[in-house]
Amino acid sequence: MVNRIIFIITLGNSVLSMHMLKHRKRILGGKRNTILNIVSIEQRPSIINNKERFGDWEIDTIIGENKKGAIVTIVERTTGFLLMKKLEHGKNAKELAKAVIKMLLPYKHMVHSITSDNGTEFAEHQLIAKKLKTNFYFAHPYASWERGINEYILFLNRFTKVKLFRKSYTDRNFLFFYSVSVNQ
Image (cartoon, rainbow, N blue to C red; front, top):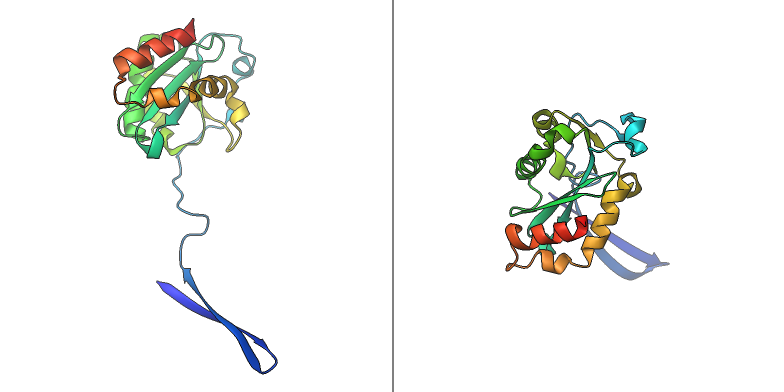
């Protein structure tokens, strides 16, 4: 529904100008997708914050040009060990959950916790936590420093972002060799 409001600016008896504005009714603050059952980073044990053990992971996504495609990155906090996988359908939560489970399943006994941002692509966090038998924590909104190692690794990846999304590169060749080079 569109409401039209006319503003008339007057000076004494003469009309200076007339303006017409469109006002559309919409949800205040934009569209909101909420993630259910979030566990805050504040509830994370201190052993994770101190980086005292192997097996505490940070997860994020790199989005391709024009929001086509995405890459999920998983970084182990103490060693910086990097896992990457291309997601063909972008930030789809179910596809991301399947990819994360497949990537971390070989390390299942070494996955103590996963920390992510509040992106809607992590809406299936409960499925990931259940399959991997781990705890899933969410950082505060707009607080990227709370997942510092992941943001640092992604910062290093940003300069190669164009290469990561080229059609000629696939999961099996480029992403594998790129993650191996970062892990050295």
